[in-house]
Every structure is written in structure tokens, then in C-alpha cells.
Image (tube, rainbow, N blue to C red):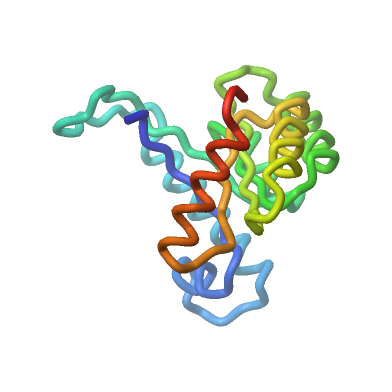
Length: 166
């Protein structure tokens, strides 16, 4: 098992409401969320915690999610990585180039979440190769299937499509 990471994104209204229960326009709520993240970051910056049974008591990396200008700036400013969503390999390449210009160190992880309909494993493999060529280091892939048997079969097809890729 690897080291844990923490991700943060305010995508759905409920995410914003949890952080800011006072009704406000969405972007004002997200701005308050950004301030909350800054406060948490300042409170824990540089701190190391011992966790019982941990294999490596290193600081937990924080990947910041989102593709808005504010999210990208926040990931560069306070994040240990960026986690985007549903971008094509071509779109991802543009974002990766921008992020790497500001954060060239390999320890700044560039991650992307995408969905797959489970239909064409060759197409999926081509997409995965495209993301790797764009500089995406980590993929979170969500199968569309919701029933357990179908989901497990899709995970097997994903593993086959990704076999041999780094």
C-alpha cells in the first residue's frame, strides 16, 4: 500500500454547503472554501504526524482538483499536485504544460480522473497512452457499470488495456 493523499474539490453544491452553509452565490462560497484550505494548509504546513501502523510516516500530499483558473492557481500555490477531470489528452497536454511551467518538480503530481463506458479497450489504451505522453502521472478511471459483476469485469478490462503502461 502506498502513502495516502488528500484531494479537495468543490464540484457539487453539497460540497460547497458543507464548507460554507450560509447561502451565497457559488463563486463566493468557493472563495471562502479557498480561504479555508489556506487556513488548514497554514495550520498543518511542515507538520509530521505519526500514525500507528503507517508504513511511512511522511506528510500526506494534497492534490488540488479543478480546472478553473482559481483551482489551477491554488494547486500551484499550496498543493502537492493537481487533480483534473474529464479532459481529453489534448486538453490535458495544455494544462500540464501550464502547471509544469510553474511547478516543474516531479514530486508535484499531475493526476486526472476520467470515466470509461467499457466498450472499446483499444480506444481506452490509446487514451491512456495520450495522457502519459501529455505528462499525466496518475489516472483515476471510473467504469460506467454500477452492478458489481459488470463493474468487476470492467476493472479487469481496464487492467488489460493498461498492461505494460507506466
